[in-house]
Length: 409
Image (cartoon, rainbow, N blue to C red):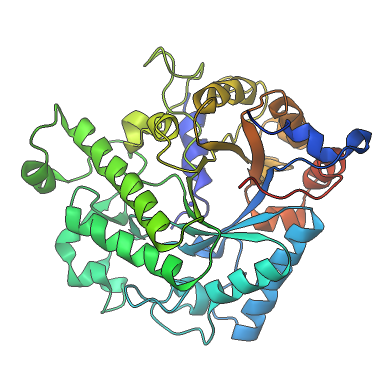
């Protein structure tokens, strides 16, 4: 999620072939007290997906649009905003490590004249919302020309850190100095602001591009000794990023949650008997080198939000099959399970017939409520909550969010 949406990769990949009471208790049906559950929304800034509506708006206009998104979340009885503050190795706060994001002013490195992250934290808390700072660790640019980056960009000052792949620029996860830098850059925001969470999305190693290889030969030659193959080494690189970030978040700001929103399929059962009954074209374990199942079972992260962006009955990845699979992965672990919901598909004529039904998302919540480890849902994304093209979000609120709820601790 230049990509218009981080979800486009997931769609393309598939089209090519104890616990608190269940979430339904939070609806207020029957007059019961609301349960504790996650009701979140992603607020994406990459390519101006959700906010700002376009680059170059005045500080006052940007601030007004941001507050409108927060107010919309409150109106829909949501309780958490996942605010993308480092979309492409840049920053939506005055970072000493990386330049101001181009999505604010249209010019990378140009001061927008205000502090979006600081404002978002303050204004979210004033409205009773939690604010999770959402970072993308390794994406540098949605183009392949380092010369288009601001001259002081770390990727230009350290060209050996960068891999060109699929027409885009990425930091190389196989270099320990890169991992240390991206951790420092992200955690600067945690040190500065009382964020309620630190959030990664689904990008670790990039999604595969047919006919291309990610050129990390030198890093593998230097650091890959002792691993049975390159894939195991790559997974270890991502595991290290996850564990180190978790440890550093707890050191810097105890009580701040650390969570990840991966692509919704760990492995297909045809690849691994422990996998899900799916036929996805992408498997995070094998293609993104993200062993999401281990992160949950080992308790390395506080929460996980698998992107279950498919309708009930979808042949390649059925929502009704993935929910119980993830519930079993999370059962008995210390990791909270929330489900990522594709609100952006509701009413999109390019999507299957199920997504033309306003009740499809409400059915997701009803189904998920049958699985105790599921502690809530997060919606992609803020622009779609505001537009609510066919009333799918309004239906969710009416059916399930009759009373307010606090997010899980």
